[in-house]
Amino acid sequence: MVDELTISSDLKNELSIYPNPIQNEINIQIDKQVPVGWYFYIVDINGLIVYKENESIIDISVLSNGSYILYAVKENEYLAGIKFIKH
Image (tube, rainbow, N blue to C red):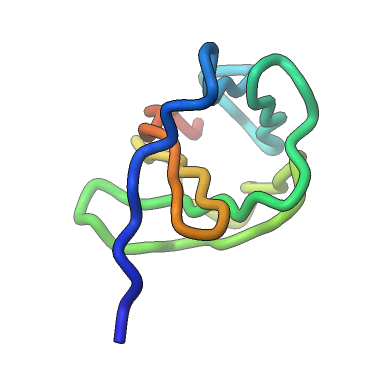
């Protein structure tokens, strides 16, 4: 059974990443702070989860060049995805 996720309304500035475009590492912030207790999912343009991590710095050097979306999930809430380019 899959739990239903709801979008978080508590966070104002929400999810941000840098740099973008990205070569090797994504740095993630939520509300301009280092996120704790969140899982991050990287989804390719086909909608497939290609990476899952719970750290705020993610090495994506193994991913192919292209467009992706990063989602943040914590318990039963999530933040709207943010697009990035890996080159």
